[in-house]
Image 1 (tube, rainbow, N blue to C red):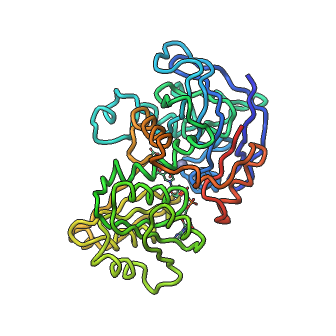
Image 2 (cartoon, protein in one colour):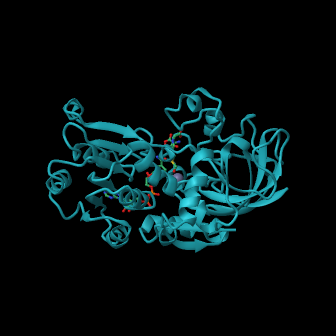
Image 3 (cartoon, rainbow, N blue to C red):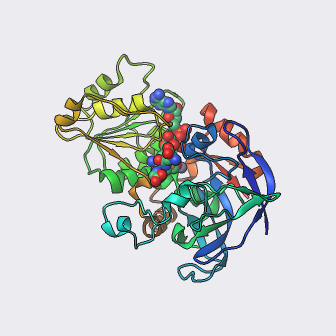
Length: 368
Ligand code: NAD
Ligand code: AHE
Ligand code: ZN
């Protein structure tokens, strides 16, 4: 079949809208009509050329929601008309990683996914006979996609696509990092570096679990108002204080119980670790830094009890946890609507990237 899609031809160049050829689902695969997709900073990161796994030409996008159109042979967990969220972190429930119960990083299809291919090492997308790469196993900047069954979370059918698509990455990443990765407890002091589409979800989860001080750090002063609405109690603008770490340590009687880096900058990653409390403070890295970047700190920071952790997709097991997060949204336990600042048709997807770069948007959502 043909589908409309935004193609990334080369690093740093705007996407172009094309009618591409999409092959149907093979065994264990599902054809999904994508109804809406968010634009995450990670899409921009890969488009910029900084992603060591970035391939071109590719169809980017990993924050979608849609409807099952057709299932391939052997598919049992979803059927036609089911509402689904594609998962860039699948959940096969069979691999060593899934069975460990220690991680959400299912590895069943990770190697082909990282090479822009389906599990049988081929692409379903092509244009004029030229194969186009998949991206993160999802490629939600295409109106129709083929994905493995293990990479679909089935969700309730009364939830609006243009809101729950954000649960496909940003919402789950931010909320999950607090609940699943750090397991922040009531009364804890929390610091969030970067108040964008991820950091604001960390803030709302910190408030949900009953954190005491919730300190936001951002160079964009326009982020303060939205962050306060979501639960931030104190704002630190690094351009207005002499030393960010000292400012946070001063606000928290010795340091944060938990800090979250939601920028992707190795300097702020170091600050996020070093503003943690001696003896027990944990710093969770969420931000994705470019190829070749490395983190550093004095080992003494760790010897004296601070811990460095990372979190991918918020530590969430997609098929199990994503439907629950959709329920939380529908039960008004979490606020997604106010974070979606812009809706765009696919033809204007490049404006979504511009809005992110200029700091004007929190999340832009493309509606098909
Ligand atoms: P965003 O662009 O919406 O937000 C980034 C925020 O950081 C902005 O508010 C910006 O003003 C702020 N910022 C930039 N430089 C800063 C600095 N030096 N000091 C303080 N603040 C600064 O991005 P996003 O969509 O929220 O994504 C944030 C990061 O998380 C990206 O690196 C993205 O790739 C990554 N990410 C990781 C996961 C994961 O599973 N680990 C999932 C989604 C996104
Ligand atoms: N190809 C990138 C990987 C970037 C990365 O860490 N991605 C996160 C999700 S970001 C979503 O917005 C992730 O899930 N990582 C675990 C994994 O297996 O990729 C790079 O930098 O190499
Ligand atoms: Zn993302």
